[in-house]
Length: 168
Image 1 (tube, rainbow, N blue to C red):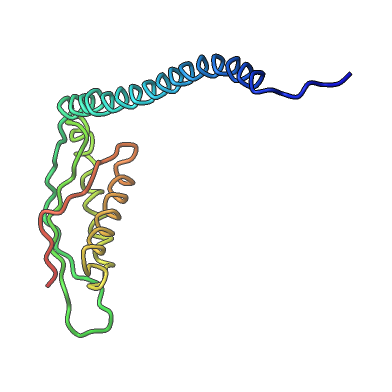
Image 2 (image 1 turned 135 degrees about the vertical axis):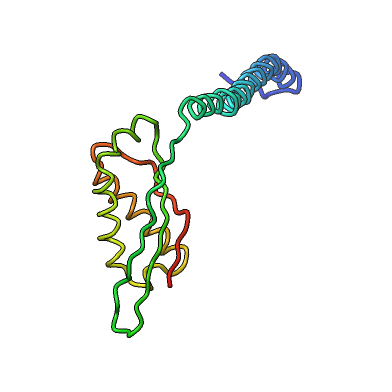
């Protein structure tokens, strides 16, 4: 059997048969891509809405419900550790404890002498170079917070805040 050579008419018929199939799949592909795009954009918009509005409201409500309580501690005056120089240097510090709630203030009042003793003991071991720059003060603040939390355990303060720091 001999095969017939393809004629222009046969090629036109094959192309006409293929066109309807590709024309049908093209709109279907566009619809699928458009639906996926709409889901992505809609999901992103919804997530942004939840983050900005719903998430922000819960933080504001929590902050409004529990305002921080501040407790002033007495001024502490200590001489700094002498590293061989003839001149004695002093450190004067006024500190405020930030507490998460009013109830904690009543709970730590009985152990306040322990907190002050912890401050005195630690501050006397400092050298003037330990207090240089903002990084030195940040380390001091973090160390005092850690020591206060150890002294009043199991309770915890939120932060130790400086009202005044003088090195003479």
